[in-house]
Image 1 (cartoon, one colour):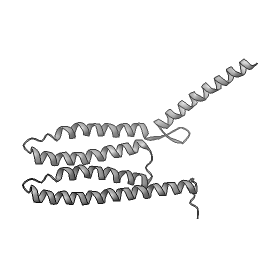
Image 2 (cartoon, helix red, strand yellow; image 1 turned 60 degrees about the vertical axis):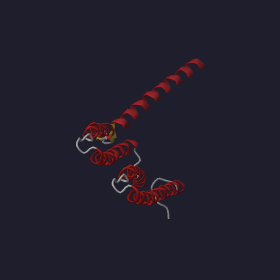
Image 3 (cartoon, rainbow, N blue to C red; image 1 turned 90 degrees about the horizontal axis):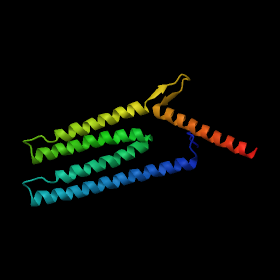
Length: 178
């Protein structure tokens, strides 16, 4: 049975194999994360019960797990435009790193909320990234009825310039030959 998606059977097989590889690597990473953090928790409880330093490697590694799983989910769901992936990665990284920094702030220096500064500045960068994405990649209807983003319009314009350049070169070659 063939899926009519515009992809060849070989292409679909490669995509399926890549999805399986990503899924297995996420499962392996998650398993190692759980085992190592359980061992670190045991070490923490037995040797330094006064201070739970386990939260630092746990939350740091959790950020990596999140990004690894997110890469799989985006690939599996077919989110291929790099601009969209970039915004999703940036926003997700911001959220998880800010949670981590908030925990670090509360456990190391709770009298002063220094975590506000990176959250404001990085938050502004995330907002700018989202706005640029919306402005650059959002699609608008053309007079012809087709929907094109600014990027697609710029690509079409550049292609037209390249075609004209090629035509001029061809004309020069023909004039030289005559």
